Length: 350
Ligand code: NAD
Ligand code: WQD
Image (cartoon, rainbow, N blue to C red; front, top):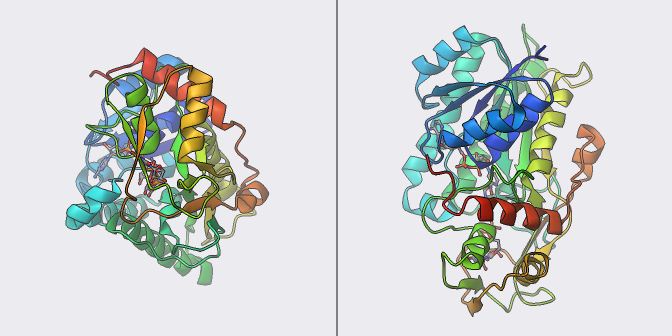
């Protein structure tokens, strides 16, 4: 018996597909809407193979209001997890309009469809990139927002829209109130422990972990380590890497939290999802070599524009209010990512 049904936008993507597994295993019904612009249907087939359960898939764009209306009319949705969107920082600087259209306009259309369907519980994929860079490297939810690229600004804009929308109910509740969790992810890596699901980037990866995997397996020749004179112990950039399965478990906790009677009507709360620990690029390379026995060929290269020296979460609020902490360590993240890469050297083929 399903607990209730969750609409997962962007459910065929890296994080969304892992969320579908956890939702189905936790007893939720799952409806996915995805336009497959950055994913393949195979990821959802794997979700069904892993869980032994079926989900409902709609291939549609979240900017297509009629399609969303139809989904809300057909399916009995209680809560939405909104992953759909574009996420490459560099590309967002080249194509800002495309990013604002997909991410900001897409969120508006989704919110309109939710309002019309009276579905007002939402968990939103935000990002650590919404924060104004801070000298300490540690980010708490109360710090000022101020993203430094169009992708990050699209996330800040959506957060602002969600705060405005929910504030109406916080002041004077009318009918069903909005209840929203903004989850600010740090650096999700890793893969499902089965090795059947993982991150499948298009073309040459932008992010560190998929790049390391492709160097280790021989698809790419050499990793460029961007910068070796940051004010960090080994001079390379430090990030808070989090296992994707821990991350998606945080979404289940967020659903439980916003659906509880104690969550304020019109509440729109932000939570960092990170481990609170930082690892440098060289820590990643060294740990990768230790746990896989493979060499990662690398060279030092100039800093990448817009990169921070250090970024890691203060994750106390999620522990306190969502009753969530990350369980898996860096070895687990790398073992699982490598298992996925070895079993699926070409990613999802279909
Ligand atoms: P992804 O690209 O693997 O997944 C996004 C999914 O959304 C894809 O399946 C894509 O086809 C779909 N999509 C994109 N635009 C759409 C549209 N207009 N209509 C319908 N579907 C659409 O990315 P991911 O890594 O799984 O990220 C999921 C979410 O988490 C994104 O919103 C991203 O910005 C956010 N996020 C990701 C990271 C990260 O490092 N991966 C970090 C912080 C936040
Ligand atoms: C990690 C570290 C790089 C590649 C990005 C987005 C952020 C969020 C997560 C969505 C940094 C270094 C990387 C390489 C390297 N996404 N690096 N060589 O930049 O922390 O975050 O993804 O919200 O918005 O900006 O992640 O994996 O690209 O980089 O040396 O080939 O690895 O300089 O120190 P980042 P990343």
